[in-house]
Length: 151
Image (cartoon, rainbow, N blue to C red; front, side):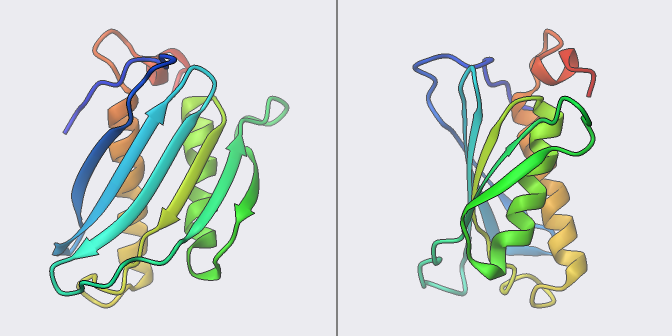
């Protein structure tokens, strides 16, 4: 799945996609991406055919590239919920490094409806899938934003 999102336009509309959790096709991750000239804004949540309850508000984290040490982006939590903070922070840092611009990530993903109830392996597969989808959305056929930054 490869999509193109223009490199930050002032009136850029959010792109919304949904994809199944690895090992749990009945549960989906919903992603909304807004790509502005100066930053990325990403919101993540899950839904399941088994559960009709609304997801609670998760963590919201800001991350930005570190010019002195590109492999170690800076991050700060703006709103925390212990169940989602680690995942949100890791995702924000990876995307800030890959996109080479500041990233805001809001995350209320729950792996409870995953095949094995939310094991570490399921969470890591979900994390990898989120990174793949976001980077796929940011890439363009003309060597896109991620291609230009050498990532």
